[in-house]
Length: 387
Image (cartoon, rainbow, N blue to C red; front, side):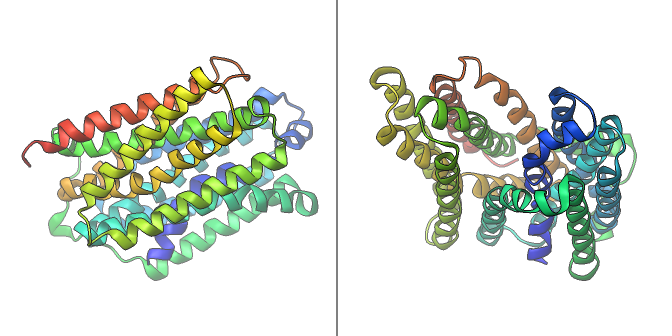
């Protein structure tokens, strides 16, 4: 069941990164501009956030399994439409639906774990999910690049269709209904509004959710800006950037593995506090070194590694603690965490480019601000008594 949930959680990086190597060819094939093709990524990310925000609360009233089955069927169908799209307009629409249905799997995978586990076990499982989340962005562009020549960009979407069918099989075979009828809330707008009010009224949940979203904001600042920082600022080649990105991703996976081993020996909140502290410290040193000492590989690269490494102690632990605060509305809690995660990423992404391609300062500022706000939320909101 855990492997099936992990595959559902890998929807976003697989559907985002696998087709990236084919973007220039897609533009020529569909007779459209670069902006038109980039809209296929924008609509996917928008659908991803909206899908989580809608489906999470619905699952608290309807259960998880039925929505997972519907979501994976729609994901497979929309992926097939992407493969067959005759125009960029059809592709943009299909990508929006693909994102929406992919968001269903992501939000409900977290909710299923929250239904079945709590405490240290929940933190271990969420850390395992983060390991998969760290591997998928490494593997997806490599797989996409390897498949582009033999099967083309349409073939990549057929591969995603096959992966979606595999997800559906995993749901049907391995994932039972985890929310029994007696724990479900009634349907209707009033029930949905009540769930949102219950979750958003829990200050401890807001603190952990903020730590989660802001940690992802720091990560996305790195993802968005690092190609320009490593190549334009540090003067490294595209191949060297790929190696740097892979090394940092390995660091993220390693940190999650270490985190799972330490859970039980240390409190989950203490491990989260360590991760946020490391992120804040490394981000501050990154900013100081960029502004005062200038851009030097021997300084920036280790500090970037430390920032990414810190996320292995931040993302999984904050998810487990946040979900643990709202056990009776785990779907709604998961939806709010997911929507805030991708919403903040959408805000951070353009901001890190404001200074141009020749400076690392905007990236460092975004990381410092994200880490500082995460620390503030963790130290203030999560210390209030449980409601």
